Image (cartoon, rainbow, N blue to C red):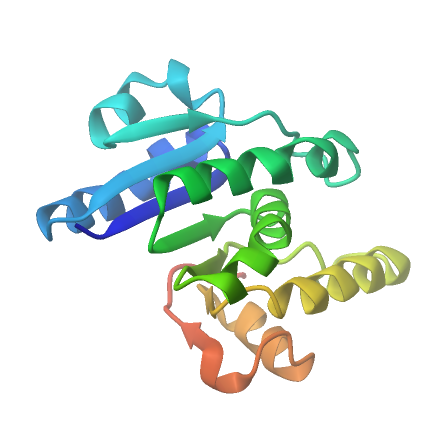
Length: 178
């Protein structure tokens, strides 16, 4: 049986956007788990997934907690459960998870996908903030097998800044900035 782990920073993202993915993959015979902050308090998530994993991190990308204990916790769970695919969402969870799994991907058949629901660098951001977050995305782009973007602005930015090789970038229209 194939095993999938869906990861987001907060359980509201899992509940609001990813339960249909769980239903789809479970109907295909996959075991589907989820990981997020306080996900064990989300009854819809408990019902939708085979197993849920709480993780302690913050939506604040500058919070040191995100890089102190979370990467080790992610690695342990992914190794223990022997997932085939880890699909990460939201910038903080995506960066920390890709960082945590960067070596494990090379040592196993594990695949890591990142769906960007909007980069932390963007046309409205300050120059310094954009440069910091762009640099982090370029690093983390090397730590995943595929990058999925859901709007044209992120697709254009990913191509322009070569966050991943173009053949690893997939655009699935999901939302537009106006």
